[in-house]
Amino acid sequence: MSITPLRDFLEIPYDTMEEMNLQVRQQRLDRVSPDQMREERMKYLADEKRIKAVTVCFTDLEGRFHMLDYDKKYLLKSSDNLTFDGSSIRGFAVQAESDLRLRIDWPAFYWMPSDIFGPGKVLVFGMVENQDGTPYPGDMRACLKAYTDAMYAKDGTICNAAHEIEGFLFKGLEAERRFHETGKFEFISTGGYYHSLPGDALRQFIDTSAEAQRAMGFVNEKDHPEVAPSQFEMNFSYAEANVAADQVQIYKLLTRQVAAAMGLTASYLPKPVAGVNGNGMHTNISLSRKDKNLFYQKNGKEGLSPMAWDFVQRTLANAQELCLVMNPSVNAYRRLDPHFEAPNQIKVSPTDRGSMVRIPLGNAKSARIEIRSVGPDANPYLNLYSLLRTGLEGPLGEPEDPTKRPRTRFLPDNIFDAIRLYKSSRFLAEIMGEDVHAKYAELKLAQAERCPKALGAVVKSSEIQFHHEVTNQYLWNQF
Image 1: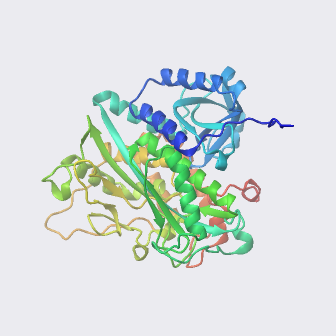
Image 2 (image 1 turned 90 degrees about the vertical axis):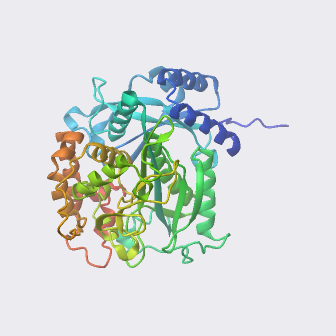
């Protein structure tokens, strides 16, 4: 007697899923009407009986990724009235006015590998709104989207971005949460740059993660172990800024899920282990219009246009104030050490990887600037939004005296100085809004005050357990 399976949930082969995700990605890049995409997605969800739930996700002010699973039938009936408790999100609404809304951003729709995320689910990004339906000012994803949409509407300018995100793979589940008990992280590989054997755990983790992100439409480029032991990097192609920032959040979610399935931990702490290279999130930016790269000029200095150099100079002029956005944690300031290929000097160079801004070798298609000082724990939306606004509109600062030797400027070497410099920026307060600007500083100070001011050479438990990506409400509430 044949047995009919009790559950018949959607499972899609990787090659088919890649085609589906790439098609939706292209619709998004082509700026197909959100109403049309809403209609298409709603019809698909209604017709596809094997989908049980829709994961709606958003990002808080510090960059933590939050996910709510809605029953599909409920979502189809109530997609215009999704609410959640904003007072439970650090940095969002106060308890007295806690209800916030979620508006689904239908173009940002993904099918997920069922062997990693479970069968019968799809994922879509949401926009946070106030109770009256207006954009919530603390949702930096909405800020980035509004700004880039305005750029495109004005003259067709598109911001392109790509992130190079490094991480560590450690032994055991929840290694970060358990650091205050163990006092150490254990490497699963010590092979180093390019030297991981094909069958070892690090290579298996990279291969599995790369296959999954390819299926999710990332357009992979290359992947490899990095310089430090148990360190990895998986690169994917550039995309429009909003797509690129969404992919950062999916990348980290996906790799953490793959690692957990292997009984391991994927960590994006900037410097979890002293004495070896830390983790960066190098942020590559260029602007284009009608398929022309506005940052390229064949005979320009280092192949860049005057527009690109103006972007660089404005970024460098405001680097100290921006540092808290790019390096938002206590632990991040251990990483900014040129001895480990991480920049602390506010300068630009085509070759020196200790410089804050590097000019990679490029051509008419690939010319760009690379901001190397960004940590992997930065809020990708806030980071891109701040860099874009600063590079295009920020104060130019005082011009250098050509008769004098240029002075060397440095990024802050601790979070307290970074907070002070950030708070002094009228420009950041203007583009973020006074309340959000102040709230972000308040959150960072609360984290900093739970940790030692003088970091020393040993990674301290408090800088791990009170890191904003290591969610542990019980520990936070001890203070």
